Structures are given as C-alpha cells and as structure tokens.
Amino acid sequence: MKSLHMNFSLYLISISTVLLGLSILLLGHHKHITLATDFYLISNLLPAKIFNLLAAFSFISCAVLAFLSITKSNLRPMLGYLLIVISIVPLGSLLSDSMWIASMGGFPVIGSGQGVIKYFALLSIGILLIKRTFSPLVSAWISIIPVLVVLLWIGGMKFTLLEAQGIEALVKSSPFMGWLYKLFSLQATSNIIGIYDLIAVVALILAMYYPKLIAPAVVMSGMVFVVTQSFLVTFTGSLSSETILSTTGHFLIKDLWFLVCLFFYYSALKQLALKGGSLKIT
Image (tube, rainbow, N blue to C red; front, side):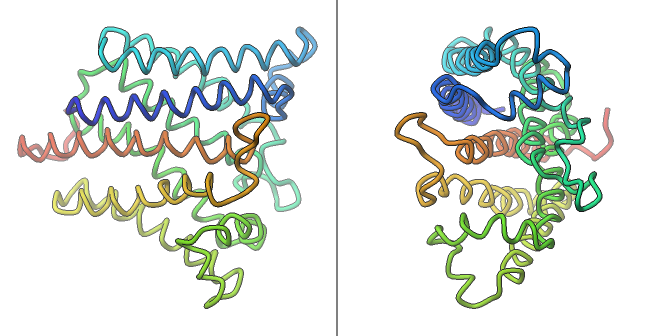
C-alpha cells in the first residue's frame, strides 16, 4: 500500500476514533454500550459509567496509536490488535435479538444493529494492519467484504418503508440529495438510493475481474460514505455543543472506516493489476 494512502487512512482512523472517544466520554450513558454489556451479562459487574469510560479510553487510545503510526510503522500491528478487540465486542452483540426489528420478523431486518455492523470495517482494517504479507487479492477481499456487506444490507433495507422513513430527515438536509424528494415520493427516493448502493456492490465485484473498473467502482462506492459524512454538517441532530457528536453523529462518523477499507482495496487491486496477477488466491 502506498504511503500516501496509508497515511491518509491512519488520519481517518485517528479523526473518527478521537471524536467517538471524546463524545462517549462527554455523553455518559450510551444505549449501545448498555446493549452490549447486557448481551454479555456483565452490566451488573460495574457501573455503566465505568463501561463508558472503558469504551472512551479504547477509542482515544486508537486515535493516539493511529496518529503515531503515521511516522512509526512499528506501532501499526499494535493498533491493529486494538481495532480488532474494539470491533469484536460490539459485533458479538449482533447475536442479541435487540439488534433486529422483531415486528418485521427479526433477522435479517436490522434495527439498532445498523451501527454495529459498521465494526466489520474496523475488524478488516485491524487484520490488514497486523498482517501485511497477504497477497494483493486476499488483501482486496478482506478490505472490501465489509463494504459489500453494508452496501448490500443497508442498501437492501432502503426498499422498506421503515428505512425510507428513517433516512428522510438526513436526506432532506443534504444539498446533494434533498432535491430527490421534489421529484420522487418518499419510498421512490429511498429505492433510488438503494439501487445506487446495489450497483456499487456489483461494480466493486466486477472491478476484481476488470481493472479498468477499479477507479470508477471505488469512486462510486466512496461517494456513498462521503455524502454520509456531509450529513454531519447538514443534519442539525448530528453534532452537539455538549458532546461533540450525538448518537446520530456516532452512526455517521463510522463511515470513515469504509473509506479506509476502500483505500486498502484500491491499493491492493492496483498492485495486483501491475503484477498481472490472476484471481486465484495463492
């Protein structure tokens, strides 16, 4: 991976985790942390404030390590291990019924778990930071699977009325997307966004076979997460003068991790293309 891509990726990790850490520290009680501790049956072991402090400290530690890793590459494996630990804890809670919408049949109709599945991206990044000896193709798959999962899963949810209603306020606030409601209905707008997400999934997969599609696929899918970051500015409920980020802001800022995955993916496929490699995993 080119140093420029790696450095920018580390900056994104540092920015996202320091904002999450400081926000959790200021926020105090966080329902998703409570959901996780309830799932692991440890809520009664310590006060909720202690679990919040542990989560905040973990994210801030990631931010410090990521920033230092820009110039000290020997710290990157340590950062990778910490990212894996931070991601595995919430991902395990996906086994809890509370993450799914019971009124719609539960799994795979995801509710609170939408923010949790984003930790797949952090898990992927952690693995790639620890082991830099994967073949380019293996690295590409490890980095892109979380992106495919979230685009396919949440993109698929866009075709439901519940999700269409859930994204309305965010989309309306955006100068890039708000105009869609002037032309299309609530559900049609959500469907269009869902179709875009699914096309991005197809493009990313095809790029594995057709190198000319690498850049367009990365740009197309990357725009999903860039626009999401714009909601931090356009949606009034994203930021808070008291806690930096609201819980909505927490959900949005995590999309920076998918941009990091796309950087890894792009670099891996470019390396594979330069080597004239095949799609066989060796």
